[in-house]
Length: 171
Image 1 (cartoon, rainbow, N blue to C red):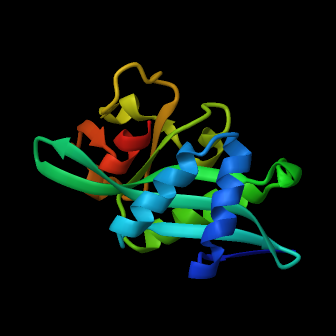
Image 2 (spheres, rainbow, N blue to C red):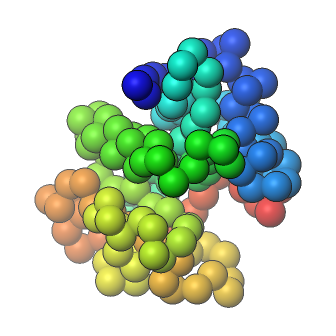
């Protein structure tokens, strides 16, 4: 049985291990640590199996610079599952739970820079279809995706999506 819950302070070391192992580098774990220290407006969920944390997903604020002003949403980054536990549906459970909570909390959209074969199953579509562009040059259009959680709030919204500065510091 897999339990999903919000991270606790004692989980931080294990979350870092999961991100480092899943991505074979420290960048994602460093980003999570830096944002956690400077931003309270995040959603960080863990997947627990047999009392052990085996997966993690992190959402942090993003903004769209739109003609109608600044629209705030969330960015999904990173999502990681320990290599020995991958391909068992844990990542899907984390994504679905995160999107459900963010919709409940009133966020109008979530963006992700990720695998175009994976994220569409959760409703993500190329962000360009919504008139949204990534702040970074050279990002493939098919990899920069969005899911709209509130159609009404997103009517007529288009522009550049900006991540938190912590992403620039590590990327």
